Image (cartoon, one colour):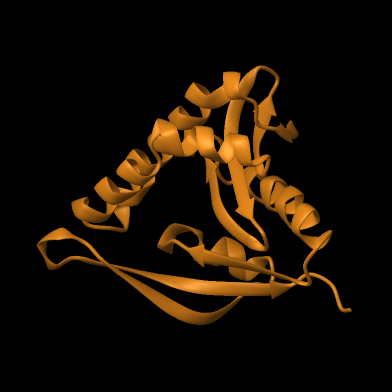
Length: 154
């Protein structure tokens, strides 16, 4: 598998990775309002913005896009892997690429961890430094961990 820069012609495949993963994994951890929030957030327009930033990549297994990752500055903004490819090291491969890119300009990487991903990040050396709360409809709150990892000592 290879992690490469995302291109505009990959937008629909990236959208599919995001939505398939969210619809399959998130309902096991979150109420419907949270799942719906993430589906709305990861719109086709959002995918195109990520591609245009130059900070989004995809993990490809031959001609199939199986995962995606994106960052902004030193903030990892998303890592998603199709459910049928999870637990095979795909998320770690994406994280390796994102951290390498961030390390070029920053000492520390920061991310907002969803419940399903906290253990992956902890195993990679991330530590919780705070918690965020996002108010949704029907008095539902999305609570997430703010995590960081020192990438290099300068």
